[in-house]
Image (tube, rainbow, N blue to C red; front, side, top):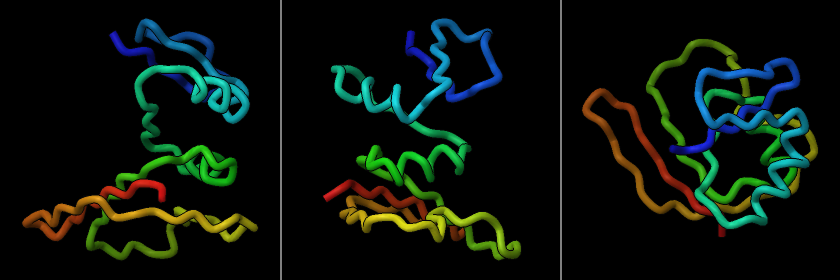
Length: 107
């Protein structure tokens, strides 16, 4: 069974076993990334994604782009000072409803 890693300073228990809580996710993910094991995936946390980009911990991205304009929203890449990161487009899939799924890998 896959280990679930949860970046949280408030949660300490989960119904999913095994779960590992990461109260200091950047420091802990840097160490985990040095170990052999499966890839990590981030779902639904733009704050964590921003921190991962800023700390050079992102090797690839899957972006799902919806053809909807809903206002200002939250930026995927914040305006903060950040070193440029170059990605190579590996594949993209346009869906019949206009959604585009794009896969990028770090150069």
